[in-house]
Length: 283
Image 1 (cartoon, rainbow, N blue to C red):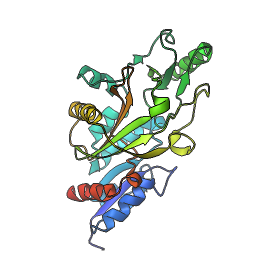
Image 2 (cartoon, helix red, strand yellow):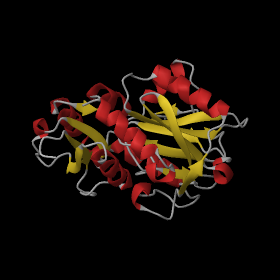
Image 3 (cartoon, rainbow, N blue to C red):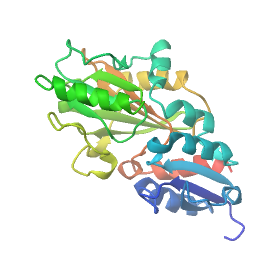
């Protein structure tokens, strides 16, 4: 194994051993003769000593996005590519997708005030993960919502406001996972945001919200996902397309995750082996 190719699965100091995906990928890659290990992205590791770095659970980047992108630029061989990470780590990429004709959840960018025409809405920063600094607001909560909006603005952060789509409470979100541009598997995420809870912490570390179960992808969901990927940067090793039912029931895009998405490999038998094959093919 000493001459075997080496792959770094980039993670963060919160999860030095990596996420569940990392554990499954390490085992699958070992079966292909590839040595893979979790490495904290800002640990000062010798990235040139690896044949490839795969960005995985780097979930602490929002507070240091510039440093994260500078790190990605400096890594000799990394996927997804630095230009993908730069585009995707600011949710204003949704404007590009909407302009390309992808059905995207309606979004107000840096509004002067909270919306009066939506019964419930979500306020969140354009750079965030796992529902950090995000909240669902409804009737009678306007002042708290305005305070949330002002707080994000006072920190110099771009703010986005979206209607809360009620079908999420019953149907949840559907995550469609792709590797090398081809559909791999789907999962259902239970509702994440709680009405009246105020600003919530990162869901990635709260098992009580957003539970995930295996799912099937409907043809109309696959069609939206493929349109989104066609409008995104190319050369993607992995992608996760998060969809919710719109007001008319048709799927709309809520996020296109190309940076550090959980790929839910444990919920789809054979998916870790498929992703390992794609990683090995890039060595």
